[in-house]
Every structure is written in C-alpha cells, then in structure tokens.
Length: 139
Image (cartoon, rainbow, N blue to C red; front, side, top):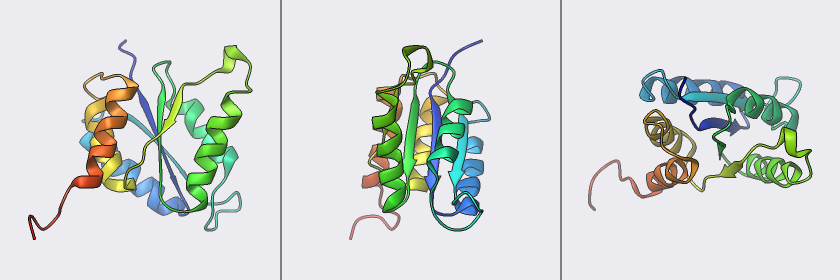
C-alpha cells in the first residue's frame, strides 16, 4: 500500500469542515485522506484541539499531515497542535505543517497533489498556490 500525505481541515464550523473535506476527497480522486476537524467540543461554532488531534491521528499514515485552517483561533489551534507535537513521545510523533492557504481552495489543491503520492512539502506548496487563484480572471 502506498503511503500518502494526510490532510486535516480545521474550521470553526463542523459543517464547513465536513463539506470542504467531502469536496477535497472527490478532487483527490478518492485516494487522498482528508479529515475534518470542525466545531467546538459541544458541536457549536469554535475549534477544538482534541478534534484536531483525532483527525491528525486518522489522517496520518506516516508521510506527514498538512493542516489547513479557516480563520482566527483555528489558526491558533493548528499552531498549538504543531507546538505540542514537538513535546510528544517520538513514537507518537507526526510531522505536521500548517499551510498558509484558503481553506476550500487549498484543500482541493492539496488533495489533488496528495493523491499523486507527492511529499509533504509539495502538497503544502500546492495548497499555498491556491492563494493566487483568481476566480474572475485578470482585472
């Protein structure tokens, strides 16, 4: 079985994270592992480090995990996960990076690239390239 970079989508909204994950999985031709981590622990709007940890554990198969976040505290939650990862037991270590990219467009680009078997750096670059995509063409 081919290992692949996993992707975790961190959003304030569970529905947004799940919907973006559904779209990204489809664009990743069913190969990319995209896990949602949306909402607070009670199912409301917010973020949850526990949800991120569970999603990363599910998405990780050893080739690293790309995190994408929507706004504000979801970015802080992603950064906290990465900082906490540095203190984990090496046997539980997960290479995780946060992409500076729009959530939906970045997830689609990342999933498409991950499905090719690209490494974490290449998948991150694909997600971040989505920042420059124009929807209406040149002004």
